[in-house]
Image 1 (cartoon, rainbow, N blue to C red):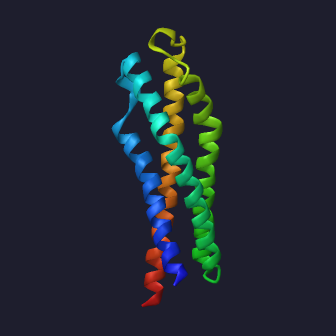
Image 2: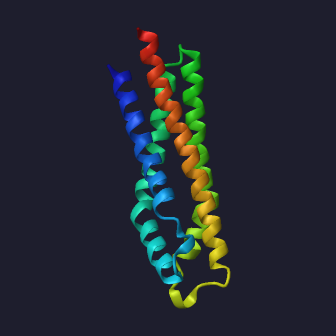
Image 3: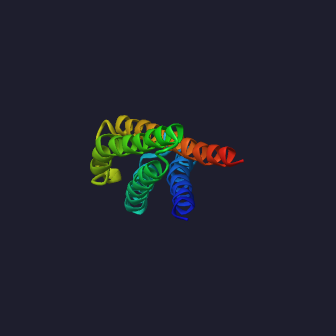
Length: 155
């Protein structure tokens, strides 16, 4: 009974995490924003999503590892889920050492106090975000595959 619940939670949390990042990627490309729009939008994004995204990635990483452990007898699924967990961990690393230092700087900005290199920092943050979204999507695809694969094996 616990394995179906874990699988369900795994796909839901992975989809919430990857879906949020995917939506930001395709809906909020800041390349054409004015300085004032960028500062306002980005500061709002960080304030409104930081806690949620951190919680989601920690929860989904833990659930993925639990799911892998519960399915350790099936080596292909076990290894695939460990790989998905590695992708989630890489998301944490990208965020902590890529996005967060830039966000900490950006949260201090006002339109009147933008650094000369604000567009470079904006583009760097955006590149880290795209990398993060891609690894989250890869983890989601793997998790979905393990669920489909498990169903196919049960037939």
